[in-house]
Length: 491
Ligand SMILES: Cc1cc2nc3c(=O)[nH]c(=O)nc-3n(C[C@H](O)[C@H](O)[C@H](O)COP(=O)(O)OP(=O)(O)OC[C@H]3O[C@@H](n4cnc5c(N)ncnc54)[C@H](O)[C@@H]3O)c2cc1C
Image 1 (spheres, protein in one colour):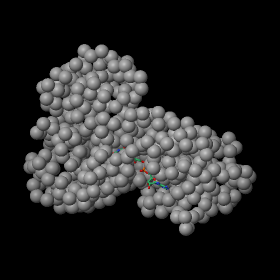
Image 2 (cartoon, rainbow, N blue to C red):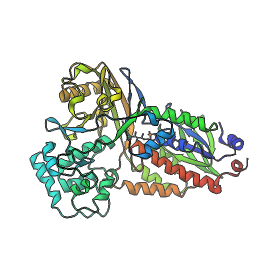
Image 3 (cartoon, helix red, strand yellow):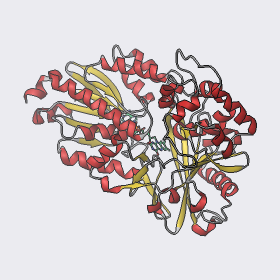
Image 4 (cartoon, rainbow, N blue to C red):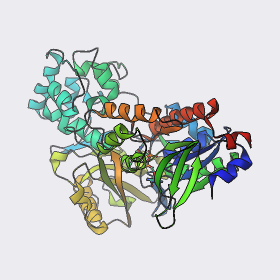
């Protein structure tokens, strides 16, 4: 299929979206009613990227991303626009615990992204030792930390509270979101609201408290509004594709279409798909790049003036992750799973376990509760590639053994599934925002080019969708200001 022919028929500027993950699909979805013709090119045989759902013991369970913040319009708005508003299902239990110091312990009631707000509350949780609490109290008396540039989470949070708070509370949180290490990750880019609040508070506990609701004595914080979709978060991509094609019959969404080259053409871009032996060229007026850093850097390598972005892409490492999903008969858990007061527990790296986070899926999502209990075990922090080289049977054995130790579950799972995610999560290491600025400045200087996805402002699906909106606004501004090829405009 050649872009030029259809453009001449449709008379619309042609926008090519490279990457059919949620960011690329959200961009195409946002363009569906606009006066452009859209083509999505996805390298793999499946759309959705890190969103995918399949059944385990007859229950639809997400293999990748599973939840969203229900109070963020940037996510729920797009879901509602796709006609899925009625299918947003709220979490039953959202509290999570920490498996540390020989027990599964509730997190402190008052914390923000793992950072404690109240030292007495921290002491009551038992997550850190008495000495650790004493060290954490120093946050209240230490002078202000001047921050010229970015610093690591370990440096800033550890400097205020000591190492135990980092190791047992903050890093486990970051291991869940980024699969990353506190020593590498950027304070500014991973704990962004807190890093901002810390500029106007001397104590980091006070900064964290300023971001959490004010509670009366003994009052518990309101649960975070977390939600998923009936049928799984992974049911979203096919719906988006159907809606794109229904609203824009001239749109094209292709799988098995790896883009291997992007070059500037006289009136826009020339995109090359496929192998060198069977190369196909597609002409575009504008291009949205919605792929991870590795392919993004390779695509821009031949583009004059793009070197600063290419070098910034090369500086973003990725972690790999595996999700082991286990189904057990309900009776296998002594005392049941639902009465424990938490739907997930995190495991600090220092505990030397394979699994870093466990979610009791059928507790978190009551609409999935039934004959079996489903448990999702997440494996893989940055630097744990050796662990992930083990075969599926080994990972299932590790996960079941550790789950038995933590919960007392008896017997073997009735079904299991291992989902492997290579280059799962970009590492927002120190200096991340400066790198993103370099990429965006470079891309902004290229007419009709925009970027979006997990690489930039946040890895959550909602943030990816917001970055897709920003990219589509840039592309529309470009094509609407007469930058489209004359052939396309006049036809
Ligand atoms: C296990 C796991 C659990 C997660 N849980 C949550 C969660 O509960 N909530 C949440 O909000 N977020 C979660 N996330 C994060 C979130 O899922 C991702 O950050 C987000 O889905 C990334 O979307 P994306 O479109 O930017 O990238 P991707 O999903 O990586 O999509 C990029 C696409 O580009 C394609 N591609 C690559 N190169 C090319 C090329 N040359 N040509 C064409 N196509 C190409 C890839 O095949 C891929 O399909 C989770 C992530 C993982 C891995």
